[in-house]
Amino acid sequence: TMASGKAEHLANGALDLLKLRTSIRLDISRMLQVIKGDKILVLDKTLTGPLGLVAEMSMLKKLGAEKIFHLGHPVTTNAKDIIYLVRPTIENMNFVADQVHTDSRSKISRKYVLNITPRVTRVCTQILQDRAVIGDIMMKGMHMGFIPVDNDVLSLERNGLWRSVFLKSEISGLWDVAHSLVKLQLFFGLIPKISAKGSKSKIVVDLMKRMLAESDKDLYDDANCDIDHCVLIDRSTDLVTPMMTQMTYEGIIDELIGVRNSCVEVDASLTSSKGNRRGKVFVKLNSSDHLYEEIRDFHYRRLGRWLHTKASEVRKRYNEVKKSAAVRQSARDTTITQMKDVVKKLKSASEEHTYLQTHSNLAHHLHEKVKTLPFDQKIDHEKTMVGSTESCDDYVEARIAQEKSFEKSARLLCLLTQTRTMYAKKLNFYINEIVQSFGYPTLFALKNLQRVNAIPDVTKRCNWSVLRKRLQLWDEKAAASTKKQPTDISYVYAGYAPLSVRLVEQACIGGWNGVLKDILYDVLPGPVIETTQKISKTEVKQDTKFESKQKKVVLVVYVGGVTYAEISALRKLGQIRGIEFVIAASHFTNGDKLVEAMKEPRIGNAKSGSIVRRK
Image (cartoon, rainbow, N blue to C red; front, side, top):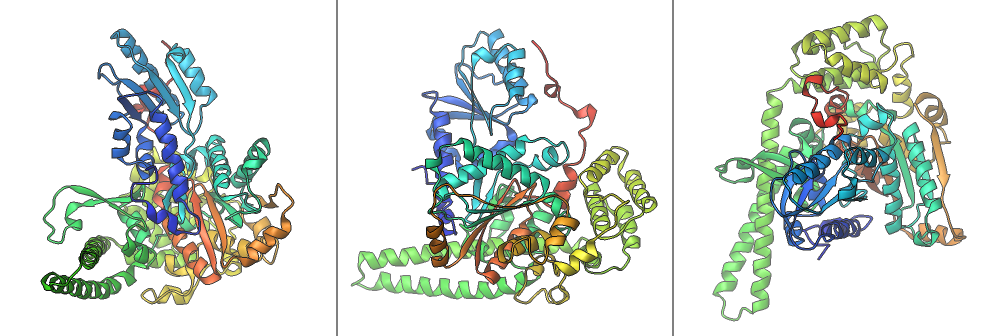
């Protein structure tokens, strides 16, 4: 079935995200069934991971995708029709045109179906016309929208959106977010209340409202909506949080190894009890692993003791089940149903033991990695930057001189300038130090960071101390007690409560026109939008429904990327406030990724396909 692929955990959240995944799988099925029989599927490299979240290889093979290639060099296999799934870039259109011309010269007759996600653009059409191949290609748009990553997390997996929207001011990424929100409301009803902070979020709301106004009103149910409130946040509203080091288990995996498409690539030995496996394997990080669901939001220092206690419990339970199985096997009056129950328990205990082994090994690997880094010193100075007014200049200067990574040096400078008033002379000194350490091309990246305000304008006064006090962003007690059960969201950054999550909290409990109105309108960048949506006259029914619900469901949309620690903070906030949060984002990010996206490609490394070539 289309809902298969071991994704039952997606139905266990506040929203049944399994039906959203099923819809995307149906779209993929229709895409591949346009051509009957065997065919070749050619994918944009950036879509391989997102596609893997909704459609496993066996499904694609079953639908006739005999071979799967990445878009690049022309496919040389004979007598096979080709289906493409690509992003709407100039380079991709040129690759497709190259394939058609190569086949034409080789006198190979094929059908070409070009699926462009999220939509066909005028530039794509123009390039294919200029290359004289548009008549040979069946071209159409395919909008996948938000992809369910977990039972409370959705992502567009558009890693380039931060750069294209916030640096290049392109609107196509915002159209994708808006269209995805419209699609979401087809499944879960019209969202009655919308709050948005930031210029990009305002554009998304405006586009969404226009799309809804132009669509069939009967498709959207505002009397039975599963989502009570939608809060949109621009990444540019809070650029302090991603520059901090994430301290949750999931966050620190992302910081030290890297999480991609809900998976982490590790040595195979980490997933083996004897440690004798070789090569690399992918470990899934979602709530289908019940152990991971329990520990992903832990502060990483609390993890070791908990895993040790859990190991004792699992070992004891496993031995009890084995003993019970042996007794059942020896008993003559044991029924088939009882034996099935024993086998089921054995399988469950064995799976739990495997998960525990994997996460114990992974946690130990992270601990060993932390020991080789100046980690604690870095965390202490990050705390100083966000939690006090003490000078960190000497430390930043020393780290820039010692650091081997440009991203980490620039990230530290961003955090310093976001939390301190910086004079132009001092900023230029830091920039020169970084350029001397990492080369002249990094100057372009630093200038881009200034354009997106990650390194703020030095002529403006820094308002961080005001934000810290008014939004309660710093908790000294949480900073001191990292191994205890947390009582506030600030544990995710060892004392610092993410600014974006405090904004969401205020939007949910008092609205943005309350006590923090001056902060929202005058201190933080970008406009504030608070609006409502309705089609039919069912206000009384809506109110009755909201009162009868045990918990309010709030959709939080991050335009420009979200960190895993922010997701953990929202889960904790949900427990404190009695709210079910569902997080949707353009992609997942951290400070290194934000900085890396600002780097300019070197001219010498530019591919010929990036230039529009005529036949």
